[in-house]
Each structure stands twice: as structure tokens, then as C-alpha cells.
Amino acid sequence: MKIIASTNGRTGIFAAMDVLRRGGSAIDAVEAGIRLVEDNPEDHTVGYSGLPNLLGEVELDASIMDGRTRAAGAVGAIKGFPYAISVARRVMEELPHCFLVGEGAARFGREMGCEERELLTPEARDIWRQLLEAKVPEVYAGRMRYLEKIRQYARVTADPERPNETVNFIAMDAAGNLCCGVSTSGWAWKYPGRLGDSPVIGAGNYADNRYGAAACTGRGEMAIRAGTARAMVLYLGMGMTLDEAGPAVMRDLYQLEDEYFGRVSMIAMDAKGGHRAFSLAPDATYLHFGAAMAAPEELPRVYVAGPA
Ligand code: ASP
Image (cartoon, rainbow, N blue to C red; front, side, top):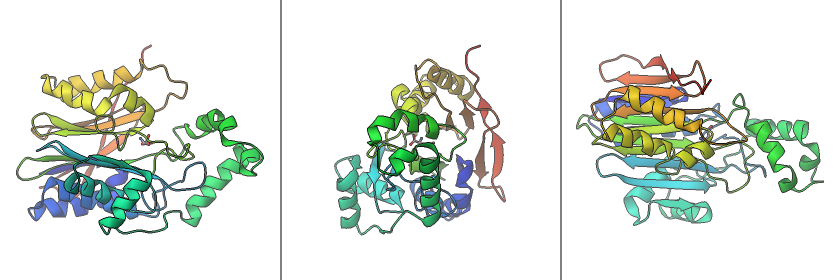
């Protein structure tokens, strides 16, 4: 039994491990862990208090994948539901579909009785407003159409120092089943309706008990275009080790022509519970929590440098 997570998963990783220790499934553990991160008002990258889109509306993306069956559920650009991961899980379990977006996702969340809440906090709104006022005041004042400056915004908000992140959890339960979950408020100041990689199965999330699981954070457009999480699991399935597959998958991202090139990071676990994490940025870390450990350890991610 073990869990790996992005570093901001610290808020939920103890609860997730408790679920596994009590005999719960990897799916229950991933959902429990991510819900606490979604609920954390200090994390402006996920769930409640996430940073909003260009119009000041918080739109959440989340997905969950069961490695035992390869069933998956995802929601994109859903508004008003703090626990997007739970709505995604219900999509996986209750519907003949695996991906709902926008109004349809919210309608479904309501029908399932999922908790609704105003997601925009005063603090997140201030961060949103201050950047717009400072960098593109004519848009903030309503004197210019959004589209005219979208490329300029994108450059401002694609800065990897800006708070655009995501939470990743991968759990392996006592039965050896894998589950992978991802939740995010996405790229802050994004164009309304924009989806990143997080809810896209194969891009930001993939799990298959036979080979392993992978989840991404960072510039989602790149992970979508490269099919990053699926590529990682496919390479593991073709017999590569984590240390062979991870750098190969990450190096492929450098081959994308991308005006807004940004950091992408990935955590991965193989079918035996081996784990690694990778990043296009140096000095990144991730969490690992084994069942026999008193607390999670923070480990370095393998830095995959670009071509010289
Ligand atoms: N991957 C997320 C997205 O593109 C954001 C992030 O992790 O920074 O929506």
C-alpha cells in the first residue's frame, strides 16, 4: 500500500493513507486525499479558492481513473462544486459516459447531490484583479475585448512562477489496485471554457493495473498534445523501466513547438509500486507515503533538461 502525490497533496495524504490502512480501495483513498486539497482555502490552484478564469469565474477540471478496470470519469469547466473529484468519480460510476463539461457537469453534480458552494474567495479575487489591473488595465476596465489581448495574457499568466498548479494523487491499495486522480482550477486567467490536461484521460491522467499510472501538472496544452500520461503507461507496458520511460516521455515535450512553452511535471508508479517523478524544471519535488511510514517523505523529481 502506498501513495504518491504532488507536493501540494500534503494536506490530504494522511487522510488518504488512513483509508488504505483501514482496508479501503485506491479509489476511496485518492478521492479522500484530493477532497482535502480541494477544500484548502490556502491553495489557489485547486477547488475552493482556486484562481478564476478571465471573467473572474472559477472553473474546475478533475478526473479519476481506476487501474483495475480502466474505467474513468472526468469533469471540465464545472462551476460551483468544490469537490470536482467527487463529481468525476460519480461520472465514472453512474453514467455510461466518461467526460462531462460545463453546464451538463453541474447539472449532473446537482442530480447526484454533490455539495455546491461559491468557489471564488475574496483573496483569490484580489490576486485575479491585481494582475489584470497591473498588466492589462484596459481589459479590466472593460475598454477592450478579451480576445484582442488573449495572447498577451497568456504570456503573463504562463509564467511558471505564477500560481497555476494542480493536485495529483496515485494510490496502490492492499489488493494491488491502482487509482490515479487529478484536480485543478486550471490555468488562472484562462479563456472561459478552456480545458487543460487534468480532466483529459491520456493527457493528465492514466492508470492501468497491468503497467502503472501517471499524472501531470503544468502547461496542460503540452500534455494534451503529447498524450503524456498515456505515453508513460504505454512505455511501461512495452517493458521500459520508470527511469527509461519517464525521461523519454518528458523529452518528447521539448519537441513541441510552443510559443508559451512552460513547465510540465509528472508523477508515475509502476505495477509493482515503484515510483518516480519528473519535471522539465529543476528542483521540483513530490510526496511518497508507504504504509509502514509515519509520515510522507518529500523526494526530488528527476529533472529532464532540454536539448543543448
Ligand atoms: N495542468 C493544469 C492545466 O493545464 C495546470 C497546472 O498544473 O499548472 O490546467
